Amino acid sequence: MTLFTAGDLTRTVAEAVGALREVADRDWSLPAAGLEWSCRDTAVHLTSDLTAFAAQLAGRADSWLPLTVGAAAEAAPDALIDLVEASGRLLAAAVFAADPQDRAWHRAGAAGADGFAAMGATELLLHAHDILHGLGRADWTGSAHTGALILDRLFPHAPRPASADAWGSLLAATGRADLPGLPRRRNWRWYGDPIRGAGVVLCEIGPSAAADLHTGGEGGFVWAEDGPPEGTRIAAGMLGLAREVGEYHPGWGPYAIIRAADRLAIGGIGFHGAPDPEGQAEIGYDLVPSARGRGHATDAVRALAARAFARPGLTALRAVVEEGNAPSHAVVRRAGFRRDGSEDGTVRYLLRRP
Image (cartoon, rainbow, N blue to C red; front, side, top):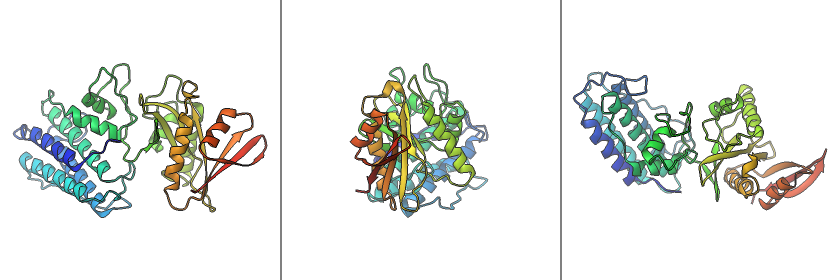
């Protein structure tokens, strides 16, 4: 995984702020491109996000801190840009000071310093784009190098066709542009802490993506030609039901399996719920037919199990496989599960905490 450093963020702050200063003499009450906010409101939002990221990381917060950041009503564009620059440098300082093991909560996944640095750079480049394009600078583009780092760190599920550079792919990943042959994204998100295997990446399917998948959508992913599989759509529907009855626990639901080689979604994997009173949780998975037989399922099960056992309280993982499903038996055995009984035409497997 490519790490995003304090130096990368500092260069991004300079790039975005330098571009914004070129339009400081324009009317910032105009709407930012593609947003309901004015350019002024977008700059205040950007300042708020960068400051909040710095506070989250510095405080190692395990929930979102109740921080409010604003700007004086009379603040001119130059002053707003100063705020953006100061908040970006504040985040860079927090990233530089953080220890490698420091982590903090974010709704896109708990992340360390590199994750918050990449998130801050994403906010800077995208909202600079929105403001500049809203003020008539439609020729401005962000750094393709930085865009590539962001895509590697936060958007492992976003396709990068050879016909598009990294900047264009980042705009497409965030619903701001189209890629050849692909519809514009209706819902999108980044992943502060994706689960990485040897050849796959697991991206959590949140409530909005689950609702879209369950009703026939793509869930914000670009799928292999024969996806999404039916089991993934069913799992997405179960997440919705769990949320309705108050049993949805982030991190203990479904994940999309992304093939690292081409960033296509090829299946789903996840938990049937949070660990029970004995500390056990059950997993399930499915792949599209075109992706089977290549070790992706085993890779995904191993990666998910490693992440699950990194959490406190989990004592064992369970899997239930139909008697005649030889490939699935092979997957769980290769992942370290051991047979633990059978009933009603199925075999139970168990993987205990290492």
